[in-house]
Length: 301
Image 1: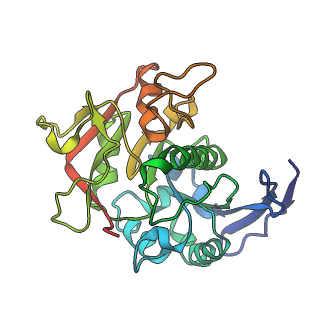
Image 2 (image 1 turned 90 degrees about the vertical axis):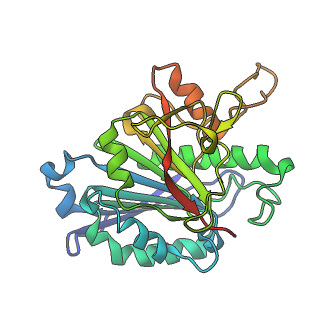
């Protein structure tokens, strides 16, 4: 596909911005990739060496943040993380042009605190008939999960830098995260980690992310937690998902098909998108872990 590059701007207050237009499959309008780099931070090699983190978010439009929320609330939440902001890059993929503009406008207010931003507009993988209201319907799950896998992989491959050491996948509608959680996970030095996700507001104990399980689909809420706070998982969800960056670089990504039971001429029955990540990882000797005692919270709408 043809690609149109717009030359980077001259640094303004230490910020370099560039845009790239790219062809979308089956679409006449082009996608857009906007990059904002804080050269003052990125030029500091000492800063680069201290656990650089890439936060990745895939969303549809303004409704994806949850009722009454927006990109402003997202940055307010991650702005409270104890992981240093100058060690943090953020990359967001949206399928809506209006939301792209809103995110871009707010990113201009935030970039001075962060290392790097990427913002991508792409909508050519969208599943027909899928809405926020029906996204949990059983008959739409194959198309929805395949779409999410494609968007996740595209976002990852388009924004992961050689100097990133840690990757955090965040659902746009996760609205409560303990400020110390990312720091705690990085210090634990585990391969792939997902904390338990509850529905609503604290102190809710209604488990939300049922893609995180072990064995015969036993979810984190029913597991006994050892003293170190970590339990083994065979599958993870994507509400809040930590992955060591080098594991992604080695090819552990999000399958866009049901991997378990697949054959040359047919799809399998399990292991699509996030649920296939641990399956891929274990062949390389990596393990997935859950944190039942460190909840994050997903909006209730």
